[in-house]
Image (cartoon, rainbow, N blue to C red; front, top):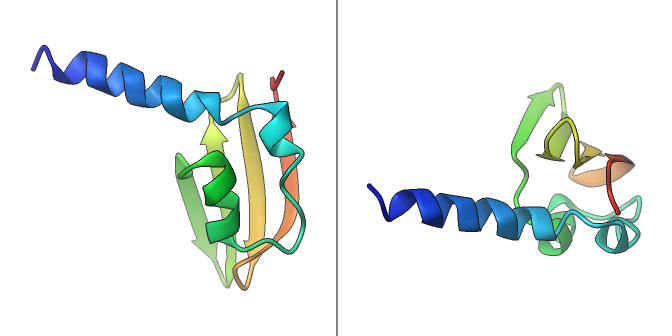
Length: 82
């Protein structure tokens, strides 16, 4: 168990490393979900409703949100990125 805590912290820091303004600026409307995750990693959470997907990377202080329709990005927003 003691080994899992540092590993979890390391994975969290690695994911946060991809949440940068530089990576955010690479995101473009029309990208697929797979193309987006190739840049900023796996989403922390996604919700799907009637053919739309809304995903969040990060948390309330530092994060990226994206909306997808038919697996194509339609909007991005960010908060707290450097």
